[in-house]
Image (cartoon, rainbow, N blue to C red; front, side, top):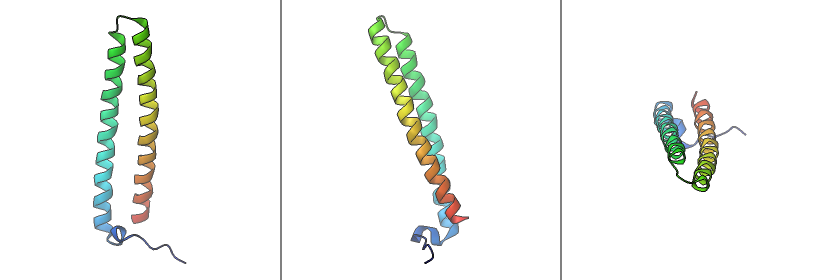
Amino acid sequence: MLFKAPPSYRNPDEAYEKMNNDYKILQEAKNLLAVAGSGLWRLAQDCETHELNEELMNLHGHFEDDLQGLIHDLSNEVSARMDLIR
């Protein structure tokens, strides 16, 4: 049985436009991640107490790890969809 493409992939031009838009959103998400991560890091550097500095650095690490994983997953999904319409 052949794979039947969802309706959004039956028109290659429309599908490509949608994927191109998703790619732009993904790039914006990566930029926001970089800004937010560096903001957490700067806040940690300005802390007066070691405890708060450590807490913010931990938060920064978890934030980057979690969001990098999400961005990676989204990148893979967009790439897979692009492969479907080629």
